[in-house]
Length: 120
Image 1: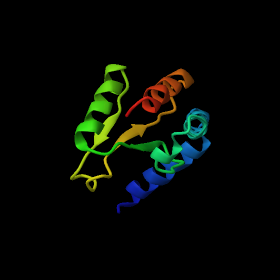
Image 2 (image 1 turned 180 degrees about the vertical axis):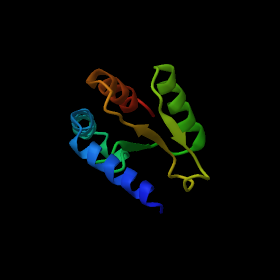
Image 3 (image 1 turned 120 degrees about the vertical axis):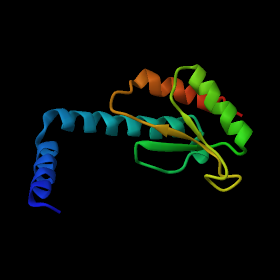
């Protein structure tokens, strides 16, 4: 790489590490992840989720037609949730992909999980 590219990467990394805005966003995202993990456990639906402490959460719904219908239901509720269907994943491993963000509110997260907990 060119020295200017390396310098830009280092400076960007330093800025991210020392930026209050970035730190606050990261903290909000971590709180949202914790809220999701605690809420799915409290709702008794944690066995349908892949264990993950990342912003990407996956909820298993077997069958392309079922996962697509679940995604549409959530999208109708104004939630940007995507179905992951076979053959992208193995048949029987279909799932909803839920991406959490620092800007998601607690109300949005709880509404999403209320809808997910009623899916069948």
